[in-house]
Length: 353
Image 1 (cartoon, rainbow, N blue to C red):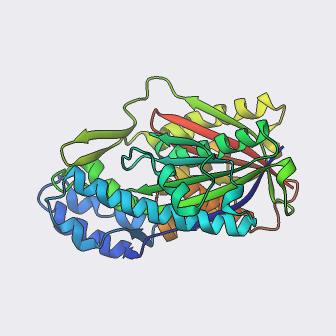
Image 2 (cartoon, one colour):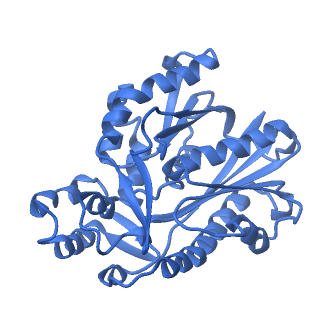
Image 3 (cartoon, rainbow, N blue to C red):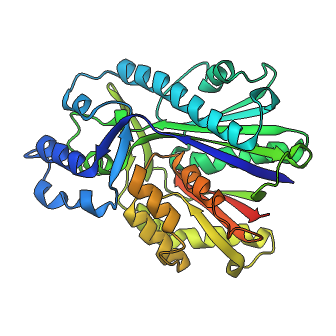
């Protein structure tokens, strides 16, 4: 068996309130995007109060940000935030850095070779023999996939401890000269943050865990590579963000979840709690429609969206952190899920201990 021991989180220092972001968008897109004034309702409708960025809002007023400048910001910020989140997760799990056998690093908003897990091994003091798995390109789904790969390692090696670190610096992907609706919508949603989780095999438990990992499930939707991702341009990453995402979730996600549960012989009625990536207000509404969920079922996902926005891969781990703090988890089945480029779904089935 594999167990989730802890989650740690970190956000950068620049707080941008949604009203401030809306004022920037009003100035920046005015006269350059059709129906701009009508689209301004997007900002209050996101159900986001504030977000955290690695750069101040004034950075976005300047046009001359090269791919190299953006990636340099990514490297320094991701390394710092990843270290803070990992230290917090390790401390909460009462695990020393030298006890980590496997590190999974998840990110999609910057480039690094060697991958940032190598830098984190140095900064955290992990063993030089720790096995490494960098995961790039899964976007918002990466937090679930990273946790699943770490848990599967500890299932195969019950004497081991795994650390997964997910970091995204989404804010710096904003393209100054892109006056499209997709860039406008992205400016209302995305933010920066990091999260880390510690997973242990059954022979390495030091404390009573809150959650046991049961299984994972991946699904790549057909004919969907246009739905979400990046276009690489001279000034960095330009978001691909199709408006059909919420409709696809409402229509197509439930059969995927039911297939995951069927493999384990579990009826959907047995699900007790939901740890779902809050990609946006319309995504939360799509979850509600797909699974007939209540406001209480989505309370933690909604709270994370309101307080932090969409940080891509770490966001679902922020929801997991709050889930672990609840007392009602005992013996309940938990569905953890997120969607990402591909268009793809990553699921994990957990159980309260």
